[in-house]
Structures are given as structure tokens and as C-alpha cells.
Length: 365
Image 1 (tube, one colour):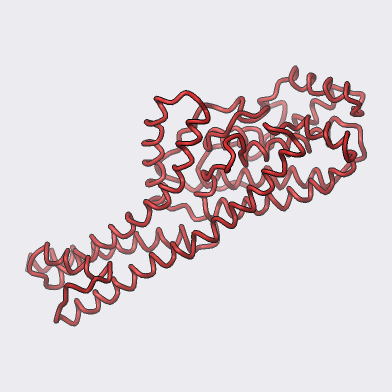
Image 2 (cartoon, rainbow, N blue to C red; image 1 turned 180 degrees about the vertical axis):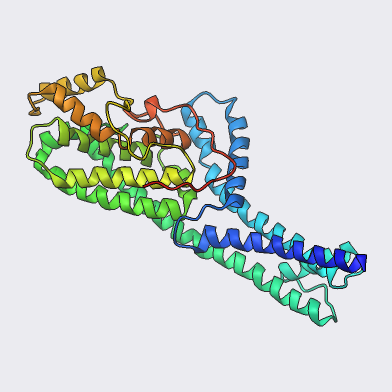
């Protein structure tokens, strides 16, 4: 009787492990929305800590970038053997609970079924059902990963196309002031409207893809000095300067671009459980840009023929009022992704950000 109860317990425990693996797979590869998964998170964080140990001996940024370029791909591929291992262990317990004489025999049956090798057979109808179900799960896991990678790399390619094009408009590293100066010299500030609309759509796509497939956040740009985070920060700062400081007609597209940007940042940091204030207000909450830095940017624009609003104090207040909506999240993402140095973003971000092992999936209004 005691042995029967123990076998039932092992069977249920094995089934629970299989459910954990399937749930993690669905949340990570199938579900088209943000769904924090503790197993995926644990794998990525443990591998990241191994990478951080390796980086302790590296000082040059380009060497760090070369090492961290492997972080996301390795973490993503590690998920597959982790899922398969959970299924293997779970079914081993279920095979043992349904009549396998030894644990090793149950393990052989489970491995033969999961990897569709077919070298282990059984005459038990219950174990035959288990064999078929495990073989089906193994095939599904591999097929999902094969189908998942093209989708993810397609989103990555679209993200990086905009980042690369920004170098022509904002310099390298990307600078909000440089972007305004170049548009004023070449096309005219009125042509910025098209840029705001393009990046508003870009922010919406990044929000969707980087919360549905959070591994994308850690995929680094093909060029070591490029980063989707610093590029986004330059665009947001440029839009904020246009709305607050540059004396041009009011442009609703710039305001919509800023709003799309800080909402995208909020959704992404919310997934990673990074704390932030959902209702920031300046001057109650300061920004990382100093008044001196703002004045220096104004002098640079003014000396190059950019018309500025006469009330500098009000311009600073308005700029900070826009910036405060994305300031802390921009710095957090720059630290989390180890972005290359760029003005007004990664140059003042913390060296690294420690993410909790467990995600509380908090929400914001």
C-alpha cells in the first residue's frame, strides 16, 4: 500500500515537471504577449552571471561587446536542453510509477521515447501511451524552436535597420543635438515629422516584440558601437528638445513619438521587474541631465543657427517634463543591455543592473 502511494506521488511529480516544461515553452515561444516565465528567467540570469564572471578580466569595451554578443544566443539555446531534461526526468518518474522494474529501465524508456530513438519498447498499454505522448512532446519542442528563430530574427532585423539608418541622421554615438543640427543643415527641421512617425511605429513594434520575445533585448547590434537603447534615447531627447526648446511650430508627431517611446520602455522594464515611478513629475523627481548640460546643448544649437525659445528657464522645465517620463527606464535598459557609451543615456547609466531571480510581474497604470 505504501509503495502504491509512493508510485502515485512520483507519477504526479513527474507529470508536474512535464507541465512546467510545456508551460515554459508556451510562454516563451507560442503565446503572443508578455508572459513572464520563471524557468526562462532563471536560465538567462544564471548564464548572465557566468558571463559577468568572465567579464571581470576584461577592460576594453569592444572585448566586452564581443563576449556579450554570445550571451543571448547561448541562453536561448540552453532553454531547449533544459526543457528536454525536465520532460526526460518527468517521464522517467511516470514510467517507473507505471511498472518499470528499475529506475534505469525507466530512464532508458524515457530517453528512447523523447529522442524518438525507439530502442526501448514495452508491452504495457499505459506505458505505450506514455511513449507516444513523450515522443510527441519532443517533436513539438524542436519544431517550435525551429519556427521561433526566423520570427525572432526577423524582428531583430527590422529593429537594427532603423538603428543603422539613424547613424546618418544623428552621428555615432547617436546624439539628439547632432540630429537636430544635421536636419537643419540638410533637410530643414520641418522634415523631422517623417522621422517622428517612423520611430513612433518603431517603438510600437519594439514594445510588442521585446515583451513577447524578451531575449531580443539582449541581442546586440552587428556593429559594436550601435545599440537600440542609445538610438531610442537620442530620438526621444531630440523630440523633447523640439517640443520644449527649439522655436518651431508645435508638432504633434513629436509628442506622439515621445509617448510611444516611454510607454515602450515602461512595458519592457515592467517585464524585467525593474522598479520605476509610473507617474513621474519634474521637479519632484530629478532627471539625469543637469541644467548645465542642457544650457551647453542650447548654446551649441544656437551657435549653429537653430532658433531657440527666448525663455530658457521655461524651456528647461518643459524639456525636463518630457525627459522625466523615460529618464530612469532609459538608463536602466542601457545598463541591463550593457549599451556602448552615448551622450545623455549610457554615459550616466549604472555599470550593471541586478535583476531579481523571481519576477513578480507587477503592473503599472
